[in-house]
Image (cartoon, rainbow, N blue to C red; front, side, top):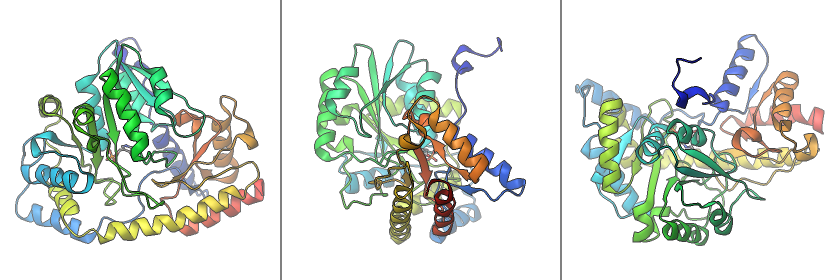
Length: 387
Ligand SMILES: Cc1ncc(COP(=O)(O)O)c(C=O)c1O
């Protein structure tokens, strides 16, 4: 359509949301679909958080706030980052947005323009490349042999046009985590070449290997000036629908984003901000319980999937996705994982997302943010065909 702006013409709709939509449609028709497509905790938002929202409403906290979020919440986020993540920061370095997705988009909008290159290591979360394109930058996909990239591989992708690298660990879809040492080497490349790095830390609490989480911005002054930490309450506190995410960056960036957000959307929902404040500063036992439950599911799904012919499934280090290689079952040619996903949905009524949507052909993503019962039924169904 010629009336549409060039920048929106080749933006693809989120494939994970598309798969969820297809699964829901089939369910509506009465098909017994087992859904492994969606990346949202199947737990309810903890009661103390809901109570904080109810209190905010009762007290009339229902008006515009500071566009970058209320000071109390930004101070609580800065406090959390200092204490838990060892990121030396203050409220003026924080902007609260409508979910981490929006925080990420704000970063792309503030930093990227035509001619800029954004390095995105594969497998990657589906929205990164589309956000770069929307801001007229060129996504440069870093393909590596395994599921992790090395600083050397990164170095080879850097050019004079590199503006930004997008890191996400634990990774959606692979669950991969980068160690402190690996991150230090990645940081060195960024500092040497003076490009910014988004560190999407939304799955930081979902780690099953006992490793301690290292935030990129904690690795010294030089990288902390280039790092933009993105996080939010959606996954950690089962609050996907509340839409609160945040970013932490140096002041020039947060000032620019404050101005952009102030014009584009205004403040994130006032009531949800109070709920997020309670989530971050209140009791954390619900997080521990949820992660313990995910750890059990991780065992069941990894064991089940690796028992299938043609599937190879390592236990994910973090997040809540199993990402088996299915190359031995359908091949790793272009289009094979999406053919497999269609087959799974149409024939076995199993919704999963093809690796190609994450830039990694020959793999398939199964979210285990679903009940153990659904996981067990799904494995049984798959066994009938791939057993
Ligand atoms: C890696 C990653 N970043 C960001 C988001 C978006 O989070 P939010 O719901 O807070 O917008 C997601 C959601 O799936 C994600 O997987």
